[in-house]
Length: 174
Image (cartoon, rainbow, N blue to C red):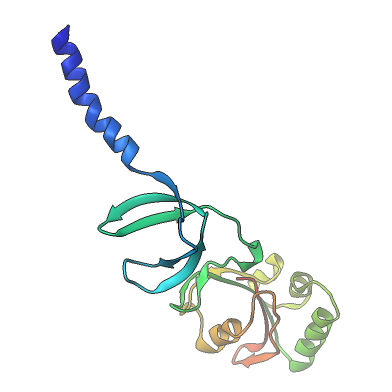
């Protein structure tokens, strides 16, 4: 019996110590701490005193943490403008004439839904989906198209962009 307990303890003790080691719930104990992308790396934010976080691992004087909190949802993006990586998303209308493009843009600027105008007027196959280009990354489209979309803030509609295919209007979603 004594040997059985001894064997159980030999097996369980390392497991118990690992379970207690990570992750650990902790709090920022000073007025403000820098949040970095890597130890001694670029500062990506600040964490204020009392902020709850989970320590995922430690390395010397550094701890990799996970924060729990809330941010304003419209601020979220799948695209990182600094690196050019991530997902973009936009709506697109393509028409054959500048006059038709001006009429489409006028409808949008007076409050009509971009997707509805795309369904009615765009000559692209994605018109039935409201002109949705789906998710894409930088480099997936011709530079003129990509630059027009990247120049927009989320929710913003472009001016008319002339390309070899016709006259384009974009609305950036992400």
